[in-house]
Length: 104
Image (tube, rainbow, N blue to C red; front, top):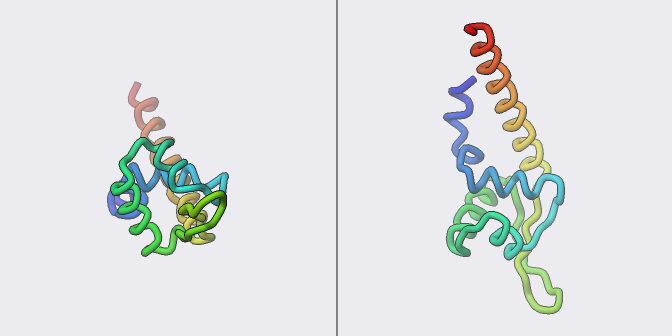
């Protein structure tokens, strides 16, 4: 199972995983809110969002509120892949914890 985690090039990155975890319950957020929560530079966030968009995990669009803003939506594929990755992490953790408890 660890090999699947190691091979996850999209969600294996902590910033991209953080983006997806933040989006999962919210569905849509503003770029500036993601930047604030994740404490990353605009350029760094933009780079990670472009990777997620290229993979079909998010959509990025300009919206007009009081002024133009960038909004990010999680796609159905992105939500599904994030849930799968979380389940994989849970399986690995429970397996590893079980192994440690058996050795004690």
